[in-house]
Image 1 (tube, helix red, strand yellow):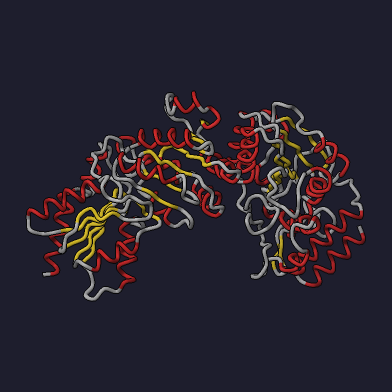
Image 2 (cartoon, each protein chain N blue to C red):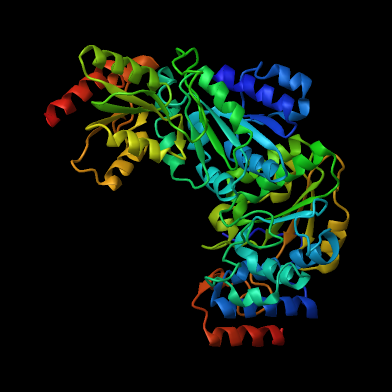
Length: 281
Length: 310
C-alpha cells in the first residue's frame, strides 16, 4: 500500500531561519532529556509557530487570563515543540527546557495542565483534546464570550472514535469558535497511516461531520497564516485545517524516518548529527 | 432515587447558574422543566460517553458544574480512561449520576449490571463515591454535591426503595452513619444494603445477638476512623454490598482491619457478588437472593462467625 496522494505537497518547503532555530531548541531539549518524540515535534513546528506568533491572544504573565484563546495540543507527544514556543513567549524560564523529563522539572514527555503554564489540558493519551476543546468552546458560546479554541490533533489520533464523537458534538452546537488542525504527516508509529488505518478521504470525512474544511501545506508559513486568520470559514460551523506535513521535517536524518518517532537514550553523536543536518538543509 | 436525584439537579440548577445537566440519550421527558425554564443548563448529547465526560471536564475547567446522567455501566466502563484522566487527574468538578447501580437492570443482562463500578472508581485519586440508601438520603447528599471539589460519582438504586435512612442523624459526605449499636458484631453496608443490614440486625437481636450497623453512603473518601473504632469494639465484622466482593466495600474494610493488626484477630466475611458474571435474568431481588445478599444470609453469616469465636 502507498500513502494517499495529497494535492498539496508538503516537502517542497525550505525552512526559514526561525523554523530552523526552533528545531535547534527542540534538539537541545532532547539533548538535555536524552529522549523525545522527535518526528512528531518536528512535524508540528510551523503549525505552533504561526499560532503563537500570529494568531493566539494570550498573556504569558497571566496564563489563565479569561479572555485568552485556548490552544490544546491533543497529540501531546509533540510537546517539545510546544514547550520551546511557550518558553520563548515567556510562560516559563528557558532553563526549564534543560530539565526535560527530569524529576525536578515541570516538562514531561507529555504536557500537563496545572504543571506547565500555558498548557490548557493534560494530553498524552490520544483522543481527549478535541472533547476538552468542545467543552471550552461550548462554554464560550453559552456565555457569549469571544475567545477562540484551537485543537491540534494527529493523523494517527484520528483513528480514535472519541475524535469523531467530539466532531459530531461540535457540529451540532455550531461551534464556530472551534478550529481543529490536523497534523497530517501520513505516518504513525508502525508505518504509514495508509497501511495501518487509512483516513482518506479525510477532507470529505470532516466535511461530512459538519466542519468547514481547508487544506494547507503545514510547513508553509504564509498558507498557515492565511488559513488561521480566516477562521471560521463558515460562521455556523466549526473549522478544520488539514495541514499536510512531513514527519520529522527539517533534517535528512529524521524526515519520514520511523526510527525517529520516539527515541530514548539519544546519544551525543545523534544530537551532533541532528545539529549538522539542520545547518546543512 | 433516580427521580429524586434529577429533581435535585433541577433544584441545584435553579439556585446556581454554574450547574449544567448533561444526558446521553435519556427518556423524552427527562428534566423537561429544567429544559423549558433554563435551556442553557440542559444538554442531551447522544450515546457518546467518552466525549460527554471529557466535554464536561472542559466545561468544568471553565467554571461550570456538570451533572451527567446515564446508565451506570456505560458511565464507568466505556469511558473509564476519560474519568481517570479528565476528571481524576484534572480534578474537575463533574458529577456522574449513575442509573442502575448494582443489579437493578437484572432483566437486561450482564451488559447492564454495574457490579464493578465501586471497585474501579475507588482506585482513582480525587474521586468521591456516593451510594445513598434511599431517596431521602439522596436528597441530603445531593445538596452537598455543589461544594465538593473534584469529581463525584453518585450510585443510584432502583427507585421506590423503602426509606430506611434517618433524618435525625447527621448526614455528611465522607462520614459514616452508625445506624445502630451492638456489642457482638458489626455489619458494614452501603447503598440499599442498609435495608438488608437493618433487617438482619433486627433478626439477630431476637436471637440475643446485638449487632452494630455502620452505613457507608460515602465509599470514597472512606470513613476509616469509623470503621476502625466500630471494629475495635466487636469480635465479628461482616460487610454486605450489591457489588462484586473484589475491590468494593468489603475489600476497603478488609484493608483497614488488616492494617490495624487487631489482637485477637477479627472474624471477618465479605458478602456480595462472587467473582462471576451473574448468569440469570429475573429481578434485582432474585439476583441479590441468588448471591446471598439478603437478611437471612447475613444473619446466618454472623451466626456462623460467632460459632467460630466461641
